[in-house]
Length: 115
Image (cartoon, helix red, strand yellow):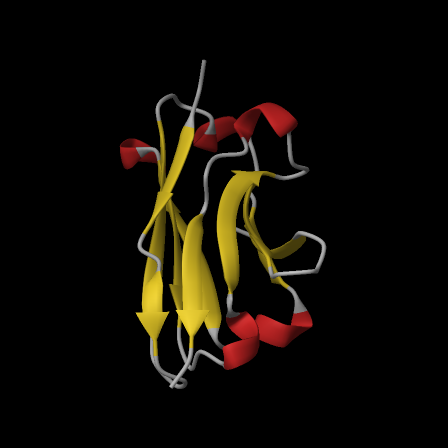
């Protein structure tokens, strides 16, 4: 069974950067659109960035121009480069296929933006 493992989160000051990684135990990236989702305390999980197998990317308006999603099919890894981070970006970040599948939700990685 394919598992997705997120990493790279942490505590960062406003304006800082982080790079998240999502490693898959199997080859699902080559046949699925992949996305990064986040869930802030008291809020629903939302899709913030997605990348199709053809390279088309989409972002939620709140992160456009600041976040970049990329994928390395050879390494079965998806990345999320986050720049100019804001306190409102604080959340647990998850990767999953798009649309999401319950069997692929992992533990996520915590991102905290605070001074």
